[in-house]
Amino acid sequence: ALGAGELVRGVVRVLFDHGTLEPLVNGERALIEIDIHVFQLLHHALAEWLWPMVVLSTIGGGWGSLAVVPLLFAVRTRRFAGSLAAVLGVTAVTVFVLKRIVARVRPCNSLADVKALVFAAPTDFSFPSGHSAGSFAFAFFVAIVLVKGTPAGASAHERRIRLLAALVLPLLAAAVGLSRIALGVHFPGDVLAGAVLGTTVASIGAYFHFAVLRRVTPA
Image 1 (tube, helix red, strand yellow):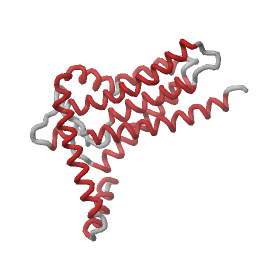
Image 2 (cartoon, rainbow, N blue to C red):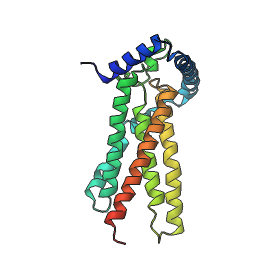
Image 3 (cartoon, rainbow, N blue to C red):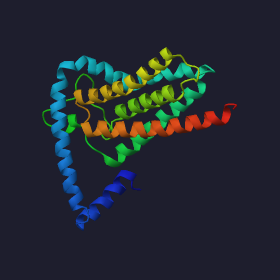
Image 4 (cartoon, rainbow, N blue to C red):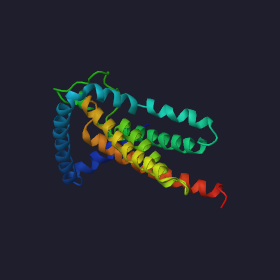
């Protein structure tokens, strides 16, 4: 039986043979060339920051998500932690499916002058970046909850702290995405797609999180 990736690629080949997709493919080629050029610029520019990039990549690889585990055992944070875990789970599954469908080869395996730095090259496909998707899903879900979930009686100091954290978290997620480019394992397009995916899932997850809270919280 054909897998999802093989089926999609087969349909694309048929459409291309009939000239239906030729303009789109030419545009895609141009975007890929731009993506490669931007990758080369960023990859070399970030070389001086290699070890901070290693730390960021390690955190974005899932270790940061371990912070959710203790929150699941505390009654006060259990619902938040459960919603966050669901957001991260949906993001991970979506990334897995898209990688199989798109099947884009990583820069360290497709560009002659690029090697995976520090860590061994991942064996799965490149698009979208799982690190970027997971980091943005985590950052935006937490940021939305921090701002939208601010208690009515919160002090001005608490409100400033929540807002500051909500601004810093997406910046850290972006830094994780850049770290994957620095290490030679993702193109900028992979990182951007991961960021869009993670942000979208986080926004939807936050919507349902607060919808459930409204139902279970007494008026």
